[in-house]
Image (cartoon, rainbow, N blue to C red; front, side, top):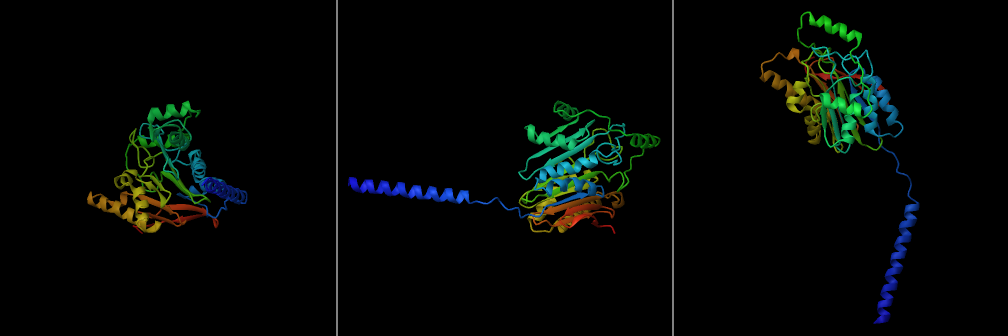
Length: 329
């Protein structure tokens, strides 16, 4: 019996040694993971071309989609000639430039700031909210204090050009946004990196001459931006109140989950908004909303209520601008 036990023990140890040796040999021969994905970045409006350039610098070097969208949208945030995003953005009716932004990564980590003043890059503050706090959104003075505590500089974001326009507006103080102008108000950016992971960012100065404290869809996860790394991502632009009503970007992603292409999903979301506008007996000509979507296969879609919405796409074919299809031709 003792000899049998010793035999079994010896055989078991020998088998274990052989397995460990095999695992070691296999580990030593493992090759680095091959990057086989097809990076792509898309963003709203023509100023997305320049933003895409910065995002592509990250993607082409096998960088993370999250880093690419942050780098990309920081370009229009810092552009004083862009009067709908960040520095140089048109103020609210009190002459105060208030900014909104959100960011979302492939793990459903999210961060957002709303109605923040004096900070050049709200998208980077949103990312810090995501990475350094237990919260999702910080607003107003709290968001500003958080930014300052984390090394951001307080700056005057009201440029001479935007201040001049605001003072001219004050003469009549008529609040009637002009579609594709005041509502040309957001950069939403979606990216897929070489690993096939998705992230998105959205940042804006909001509607020109809005009531102080107004927040649109841009910093609201599910409205202005949504990312599901299994399915795809979507972002929106235009009159945020209408996007919030249907939780638009989340809706687009859910429609893609149900099997719709990015294009058909954007169309369905716009049609739902149009239905609600008509239900409230509003004039459709006063409304503009556009959606932009990207799925895990690298397919894109874009659709808007009115014509005039365009988007930029950067992939292996280069950086190009496209006109989105629209409900009103």
